[in-house]
Image (cartoon, rainbow, N blue to C red; front, side):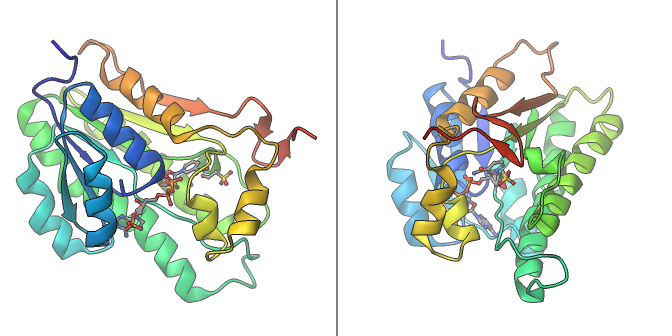
Length: 247
Ligand code: NDP
Ligand code: 8X3
């Protein structure tokens, strides 16, 4: 029997990167997986790569959409993954509209996802809720103020949720990776693929599948074991600002 046979998983923002790799890993372990994203075409392409998956167009920023669509999925394994950064501007120089997009996605999006899935987990008296945090939720770096603030918020949600759900049977996990090679930097640099590639050059970054492996490990532990926090780095990365690139 596959370890996640009979489980119903939801991964938000799974059209690429960590979310897609996680959805694939959970499906391969036997879970029935629903993935979300903002665009029908990108979602359909991702669904094709994940055995048995279904796609639901749902923008995590949209409270009404999340309230309407997420509870019906009755997921007992939820990965709040959707997130992004835009720019590396200093706090006194950044663009207010871009900040809103980042805060609404990374903070309010996680709140909407949590609010509209966790009541079902509590009702079941079991299940897993996984926050995709970041080392940016533990350290800050120049040019990262807004993104780091959003990931510090995610860390606060995780810590408060642990206390609020104490005794409920629901397990909580925050996975906080360092550098992972995905579309993240392309999005951050507003589509500039050359600049995005330079972020990863010689860094031997984590792959999305490395993060997916860690999540899969945590959610396949026996019910009495709750892996709470996973911080994972590329071996060449010591902190958000200290990277030993291969020459
Ligand atoms: P990607 O850009 O590859 O994936 C981001 C995903 O989020 C896409 O599937 C995108 O889908 C989705 N998404 C963005 N906005 C929304 C929204 N409003 N509603 C629904 N889905 C949305 O980046 P990553 O895989 O790297 O990022 C995934 C998570 O991992 C993020 O929370 C990020 O902060 C975190 N992280 C990333 C690290 C890295 O170095 N890459 C390190 C640590 C954490 P679509 O555009 O199709 O809507
Ligand atoms: C993404 C990792 O260090 O670019 O969360 O903020 S970092």
